[in-house]
Image (cartoon, rainbow, N blue to C red; front, side, top):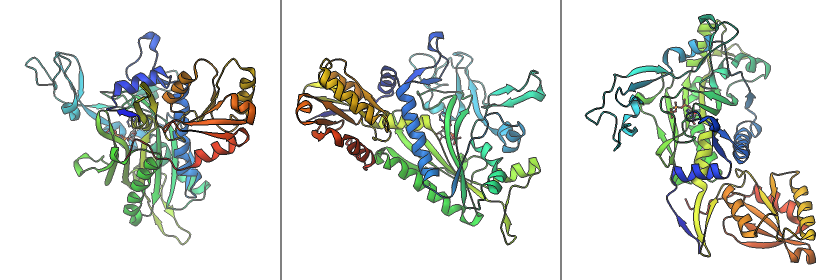
Length: 454
Ligand code: ATP
């Protein structure tokens, strides 16, 4: 019987991510650049899966949401109108002694730079400034001149690109509320205290959907999206004991929001926001109407007109990936040997199956294994591996979360069957080699529940 060891620490996740090439610190050969990461092969594959699962549930499986890909650098007036130039700020405190910067609203969970570390302000030598507002938008200049007229911003959220295209979509995609616009893309925030690996980055990939509804339906749709997004995570295997809904009270809500619920995950740093679902009311469309002079409203066939209210589920792929890695990470002792395994949902796992000839030097096994590999790779990301002892090859696949391994052995040469090994239960069964493709298609469609419990 396998024994599981807890808890999962951030260090373990960082170390596995690095060891197996999911995520590396960016610009590492130059000493890195704070809290910026590059994704390696398995990181890219997993991110692609998360993105397409989100897109599938938001766009492909629905009739009422369309896709958009707007630019990262928008006309700076967009950010004046949205309130970001004036108000997209966090309160910043400097310590004149240790030269560190802290978010005034996160002092409780911050650490002073002095050893033994305490909260900022708790040492006699701490010399904290008053809080001042620090704008999180990255500035840049468009064109050859670096003057005020050329000032522009890297978008801190993808949502505004959606609002300014509201009219285009309404007319060209011939939509009427309730309908949504979904967008995935990079966002940039000059966070005061980035860190905790992928949790708080300065450059991250957001997935946002703005759902435009008749004003009197806003409350109903808000609750609908809170539930829909919660279920998306649990259907992908996230444990319910690690996921919760938390309503913001009035003092926490953004200036535009009349209701916000966070989906929080129990990361190694404690319960923290994974995704936010906000009722943004008519704030954004009204602001852009006022600033641009273009009326952003819905006019019905019988002349009714109104400014739709907006419900927004917003999340980053990076925070989802971190939650999935933490939730999936497991160490256990099997037959007196330790193994590390990522119990990822098969649809999230970067590689769906490994194809392994039991003896890498056997031409017959290699030929059959390669031919199975060629057939499976047409539909799925699969890996062929004939190097080293079979146990080590299995463990390598366990660490990247590959749910199934097909092994070609002596019996295959006699009866055209292979073994399939299950990553989680380690159970093995034999299948006809001809049936492997259909078996894998089917296995990837089946509902999946983590063996780690609820
Ligand atoms: P926080 O309170 O953690 O700073 P926020 O409330 O400012 O987050 P939103 O503006 O609601 O975040 O952003 C929506 C989503 O985008 C978040 O739920 C999170 O998934 C993601 N996100 C925001 N900032 C970052 C970041 N710096 N790094 C990674 N993901 C982020």
